[in-house]
Image (cartoon, rainbow, N blue to C red; front, side, top):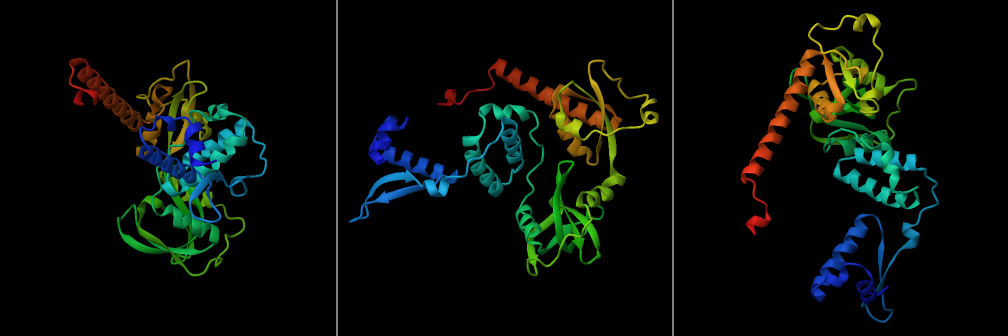
Length: 328
């Protein structure tokens, strides 16, 4: 289509107050399409360099027919929400733009509503470590120990990246200690540098990196006793564990009783701060019964949020909050 054809047929371009305004809108939209991974080709005249039209490069953009159910597309949408780092988020957005065109409809996302992962961005270390995991290439980085605060250089053969209790971890073989180790990405300082050639190691057969990570964290874990509304907090339910009757028959005298209209579940956690963040996000769908320290922190966070809400409502009622329109 020529530029004039696009201007006359695409909704919104008719609102342009001048040719210059249209040109700005047109260039903005071309950039937006390209950012989504849609290749826009400029067609020029044979005898001169003037632009005479624009088209989507079908060969570059087309993909084979993919049969996705609503549930499958919903799970892919959920996975895309997981990548909060900018470079990976862009790739995920581009992929979903194509997949939604062949999916079962916009209702697909409804099947995973409420399951959005609560994982913070991993920072600059994630990209280089992902590359190293796929390339089987060792890496070197500076790491601050949680117990002592000491910063030391580590040389690691990275096996896998995992998420536990709201944090990213890399698991692999520590060459200096000659043993499997796990490292939290938030404690990596500075750049992660590739060391040696790609393909310099293989993940040992029969070794489960998740087991390596969980075994090193087991001694610091606790179990929360939660009362959850039916069919709510699916992410918490998926991590629930069975607790022997002896552990639940005589709960702490200070713990709250389980409401009759809720389900009782037990969920292990290691970082109380991260777990408080997660539980508070469910609002009144989750009530902490014990341990007391966790319950107190959740209640305190909710009380603070309620106080802030009352303050905002009070300021609005008294006229202290002025809209942008009032400022002109």
